[in-house]
Amino acid sequence: MNRLFTPDNPVMQFITKLACTAYLNLLWFICCIPIVTAGASTTALYYVTLKMVKDEESGLTRAFFHSFKENFRQGTIIWLILLAAGIVLGIDGYVLYHLRFEHIFWTIITAIFVIAAIAYAIICLYIFPLLSRFSNSTTSMFKNSLMLGMRFLLCTVCMAVIDFIMLFVIIRIFTPAIIFGMGMCAYFSSYFLSNIFRQCEEKSADVSSVREDSRL
Image (tube, rainbow, N blue to C red):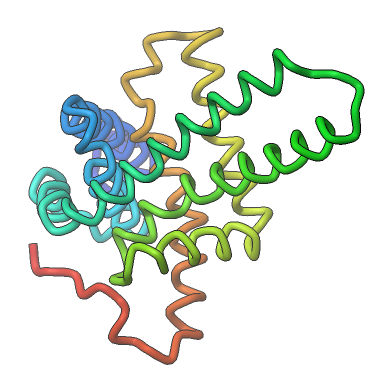
């Protein structure tokens, strides 16, 4: 019975990770409250979860705010661009839905909108994890996010499914699961992202582009 509560026990490790995702979700939510800081907060969340999947986490709070501060400016710029683009897409989608009619022009415009929406979703899945791991210009971050999402399409679909399942569970099945929310989604997605980034680093000729982790 005593062995069940030892730190090396798989059950205890799972419970610990679960508790960490809930704590990180709380940090993420609090830091997102000013709205404009959502980008830096999401980047910090992925910075920690990418460490967790490699069992390199130590001092979750310190690591979170280290990344939050380091990526605040660029993360905020990226978030504001995504927010503006999301509002435009939302308005376009609303207009297209209510003005639907049988015409080739409407079909073409709708097809373009769907492609743009998919590209937007892919960028949202990758850009903040990418920012947490690599140093690059904002333009390159957007371009690389889209390219990675298309190249590793299966991983992209899996991460989207993770987010959808969590949203479905919170809304339709068990609302208190919101305590894990984004923290758990980021943690499970980080298993895919960690493998993708490792492959990118192995193939990258410019190793200086990889963000050096500070000693925390």
